[in-house]
Length: 160
Image (cartoon, rainbow, N blue to C red; front, side, top):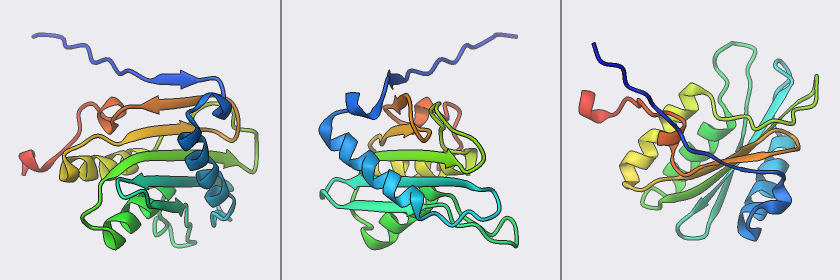
């Protein structure tokens, strides 16, 4: 037997104001999208904004449904919308923000496992990383240079 250690690297900013201007604007769009999320069951609103290589911005927010698990997360809403509307574009950056209507969220909240896998598919498709910035409602913002930093043992087409 041999043990392997897996490490990830994240950059952590103290607040949105420390981010580069273009990322601040992208996070602001994610925050706006978050407020329009349809989350009557979880009361947990998530917004995402993507910057494409064309300069186009795509937003998404979580959409819940009483017939669980028929809803969809903000990250997948945004990335699937980008894939459908701009099939040849590359996603350069993703900004994600989440807030609970039950308690204040002040720590960075990363994408769920299903969203990580969906983002991985697009990184593989476009053959380039997607920078992912994520935060709670307020507070620190974390940046992963690629989904591989959040999903180091990803499942891809090579296994099929």
